[in-house]
Length: 332
Image: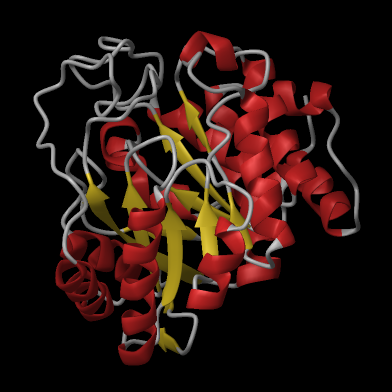
């Protein structure tokens, strides 16, 4: 059995887990999960204390996506009964930033469906970002799909602080999830973002019939990409998608996954993301011992936990909101 606390101390000294240790962590007995969480918290506390970053999403363009991602209700192959619409107007995007600020979010995530932004869509987002930056002290994260050469630089100039493009799964499992673009297409966008001096955000979706070795490979791939923010999603299988009915996760395994990502990416912002409500269920508060970030409000096409419940959860844990521009204890 792994000595998790000793391993955590070694990680803080610069040690890197082996693949075998990573798989062993995911296979640890359920009765050892609290010990694992305490050890992961040692790393999390070293870099982030008891602070939690809050993020809020706005879905600026929904559905009608040309890609065939098996998990996504907006995919061309999905028959999910979701609301579809073209790019919303600029005022709605700016108003969303106001709501994010009111909800204590430090990062506002502007998301659009599709393979990548057209020039018209890019110009529209750029104009909205410039207006938001003039009014609100928010970090802006854009998630617009695969970027073409030069687009990342334009987003940077407009004021985009972070760009999200998930690898979603391991390179070897990628073709089981989507075939309309390659794993390298995703990696290339993350690299373009980094070259434009935008903070790279890239994460995963766990529970898509991958192996535990795949999960470990995902964590190492993000370490190699130097992702500064890592959203860890847990599959919320939506009716009408290719992964409809998939249900491989349980709360304790999700906690093991989050701990693994903390051990392999000790300095990264680890965000408990989509699917936390349905997969972690009553154990959601424990996820913030390895993770230091959450989404508040709804996701793209699924509902999230009530924001007031999230704030209460932080209060009950004795954690603080990290606004990015100020640090205010939740209990005050």
